[in-house]
Image (cartoon, rainbow, N blue to C red; front, side):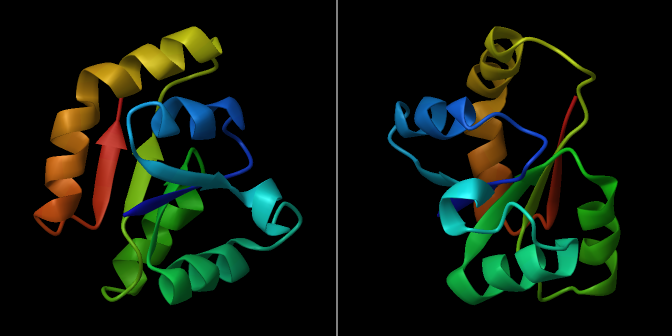
Length: 109
């Protein structure tokens, strides 16, 4: 499982997830920082990535495309990276299990 971190989230989340032994990449590291949501969606589908985003559009895409990539929808407001990382730390085991169990959208609140 490889996490594709969307533009609204910090590139530091990549290193934070890697610190937990997970594979992650930021859209800017894939030359996708100026791509449309559909282009990111198709890239994730083609490469078997899990999209991690704050963008509600990916939630809607998931509802229209049952064969699309899983989406981790971060629904936290603006917060410091330390808060974001702490929430991921707290929910990581359940998040990974939900994706393994086939959940198409996992919300982080």
